[in-house]
Length: 242
Image (tube, rainbow, N blue to C red; front, side, top):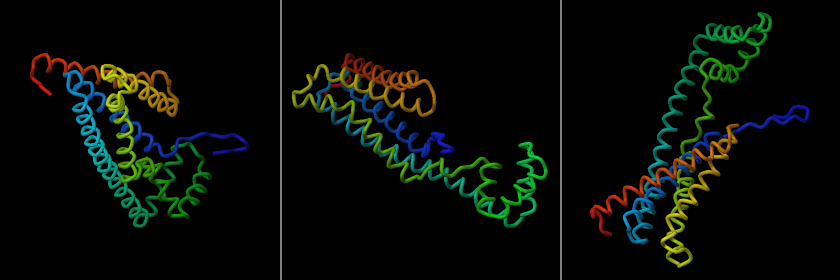
């Protein structure tokens, strides 16, 4: 919003940011955990790549479907509340008008202003409905997002994050990256990219970007170390032979 040259930055489509951060973080952590765990078991690079790619695409599909169902369900619940409120406005207009007045009375508006505001709001049923939804029920359908768009963003961001830890192993097949360094390069890429996304998310939320970056990157590193430890233990116990 701009008033007399003053610009107020606001975050729109915050649900898309949520889906991207969630998908990217889950994708990179999933792939990093797989390459670290399977790599810790001294598996062949081909098996590590295959396992990570299968996990990446399976995880991306699962996350997209779950996000679609979650957003769809939430929208259906909110839409049922909207229909109920529409019915009440049509059926009990006087009671609903009194609720509008009470809303602004609680905001300490004077009685004359309450009457004028209520008259203005109730003269337009779309404005009336939106006011009841936001002021009385605290609902905002736009924040929930579109289930299909949310699923696509989740799927794509999961793949983007998921492919990063696999890249060093793919490059090792060409001889560009020594295989023995692939895991450490994967961890370094994951920490760096997770830090950037976490810092960006924190800045959008007006939080400390350093803390946000460390928080997101630290979680991914922890998963990698856990996966590597499990793989190494299984290998030392001769439970795996790839």
